[in-house]
Image (cartoon, rainbow, N blue to C red; front, side):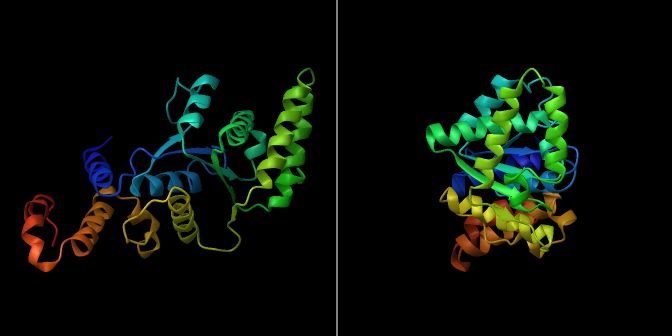
Length: 239
């Protein structure tokens, strides 16, 4: 964790108490891991939420079933990014089964995200999902019980109220997802709209961090109390 990330999370923890609210992200690394899901992960982190993402580039060597199950159980909410290639990943499907088990057992919060995909395609396993399961049935011919679990978990998840991208800008969609999660967790977020900056700029820790501090100074410190914020302002060079 970098210096600015550490300081940002510390201040968010003090002001908003959000740093311990773990969000489990389930997504296909093939088609969203380096774009949409990565941007969503960054936006959640900037909002002060801890995330766990079980793709190949994160926590390598810890991607065991027990580690994943533990992360889901310790999380307050799971975000499932249903994309075209989600059902092609057995890792994603195993995660989904664990997530839906946690929802049934403990009321774990689940938020499905349909990325360039209609919920009916997930529910009925049509299109690319049909192709994926045709391949799974051949690969797991002796484990059809596992395949049936995947199918059932997909149907249950698709029936949970979720969010659909449709024709919205991705930056605005990500902002709405972060705020939806905050609402579900009864959290307060800094009043700095993510969409007010280009996505590439929003992902730059120093610039976004300074913007948050400027907003906090206006929100929490009236002019008569600005001296209380003097040292912080001087330290970070905020104008």
